[in-house]
Image 1 (cartoon, protein in one colour):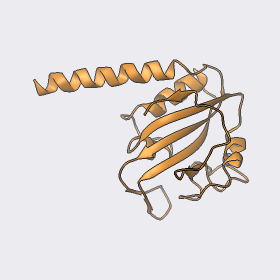
Image 2 (cartoon, rainbow, N blue to C red):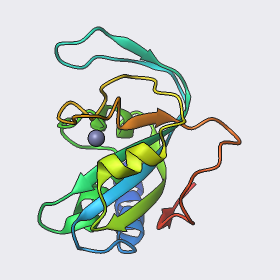
Image 3 (cartoon, rainbow, N blue to C red):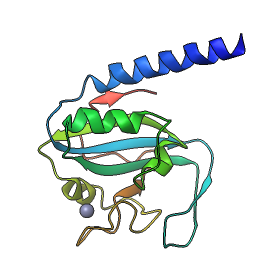
Image 4 (cartoon, helix red, strand yellow):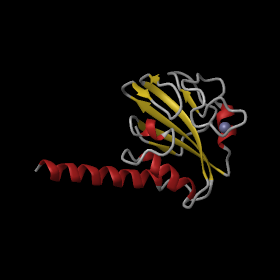
Length: 156
Ligand SMILES: [Zn+2]
């Protein structure tokens, strides 16, 4: 009985994820994820000191250049269950992606630069390969207005 209910819940969650991702284009580009974290957790990245990440809202800038473009990449971010591969996977498996801004042909570093006034909770997060970005992850305090229009995907 319990296992049946669990299966049904998972199917529904997967279906919702597919519907949300369908709003995204299949072209390459950049995106911003808004992630809500309800509980703090200790982030351990390879070769770095552990950092305590507070509960709250975060913004992550990334890019999608692979097959399926923005839709495939963001669909992966929307899934809670996955193998940890990128820094941001630590957040999307602990928290919930509540909004996505997709920018076809966009550049993740340009998006990060637009968010440059926001606090940087974990220096170097997602930006190990960047020349100039202090981080691709920012805290999003309540009341802070973003320089983007309405999100491509919103699910709260
Ligand atoms: Zn960058």
